[in-house]
Every structure is written in C-alpha cells, then in structure tokens.
Length: 166
Image 1 (tube, rainbow, N blue to C red):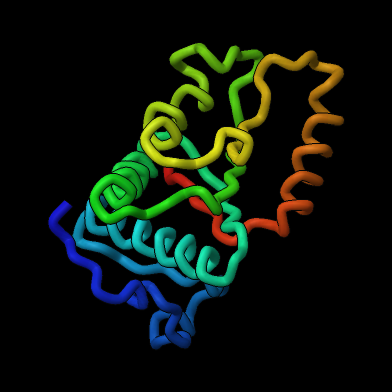
Image 2: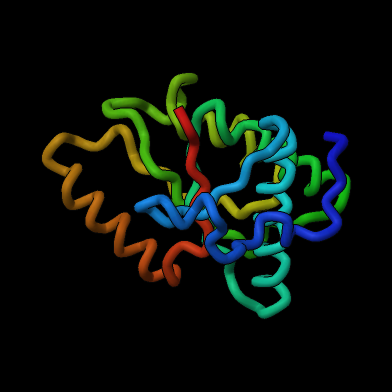
C-alpha cells in the first residue's frame, strides 16, 4: 500500500466542529479518500498501540472482526510484520463472533477467515488467539459467552476494537 503514515495522530480526536455541534450523537469519525487509505491508517494505529504496550511490558488486547471491511487492515498488519518486524508476541485477540453450528476447519468459519488473513502470517502465540467456539451445544452457548466475557476482563479488557461495516 502506497500511503505512508508518519504520525498516526491523523485520526486523533478533535473537539466538536461546526457540523458536529448540530448532531445528537458525538461519534468521532474521519473520512478518507478510499478504503485502502483508511485501512493503512487503522493498521498504523493498531501497530502503534502494539508497540507502546510492548514498550511498557504489557499485553495488547485487540478485539477483532471478520468480513470484507477489515481485510486490508489485516493485509497491512501482515506487511508490517513481514517487512518492518512488527511483532504480535505481546498481543491477545478476541474475535466478536463465530457462526453456529460451525466447525473451525470449515472455510466459511470466522476461525478459518482469521487464520487465513492474519494469524497464519504473524508471530502471535496460538494460546493468545480467542475465537468463539462454533461447535458447542446449544445448552453450552450461554455459559460459554459468560466465560468468554470473563476471559476478556481477565486480560484487562480490550485496548482496541476493530469493527466492520456492512
């Protein structure tokens, strides 16, 4: 990707402007020329967070999503790992969801998607990757979800949540 990011403060929040003052919600948003530019900037934000957490001797806890929206973000993170040495050894991930019932080896599963687009290409320890289990019984779903939330809390909560649009 050709966009060079010198300072990820490009997406730093600024106080409400003339347009934001007239809105009911106060959601910070930024418009980009195209999805590729947005993906590069978001990947840089994530990389900066990973590095700052690593420098502080802390784990970086990421909430991740699937779908077409984050694919270029993952591609840029993989590039940063391969070409710039960005390490994922201090990263813990929690994916939003998984199809149910669905085996993780199914090409339609989110487990498969995440490994195909990110995890198989970076140095994240397998035990630091968390994706909901699509093979549990219906009776196990609620206890599983409660335990999943507790695991997120035990990791210190999410430092960053990546979401898709669509």
